[in-house]
Image 1 (cartoon, rainbow, N blue to C red):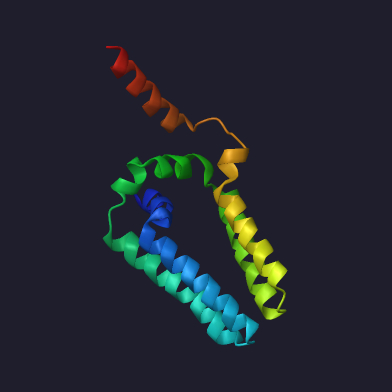
Image 2 (cartoon, rainbow, N blue to C red):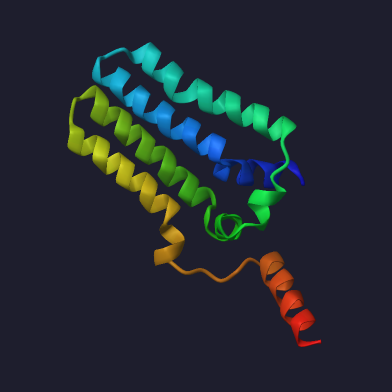
Length: 141
């Protein structure tokens, strides 16, 4: 598996997802208390460290072969990544300004980015389509 695939599929590993969710909410709480440096450290360092460790040491074939992996391959592009980042920044802003509705809005933006493929159907990328077509041909034989 190449580095691009590892970078994509590590995002859906349960360990990475739990790390991101916990770090995000602790960071929002620290921002709520106006602990800027601590909030930035908790909000970014654990996620970056876990990503670096996982990408360098782990194999993500199980994630790649899963239904969620196929969904991520098809729908989690740069736009969805950007939306997730914006959502996190909105959450941090909500924490800083002590506006719980803004924290909620940021969270909804992140959820929307993850679920965008359920709303906006896109054609399969060529490599996914070719793999899918080969499987159908094998079934016919």
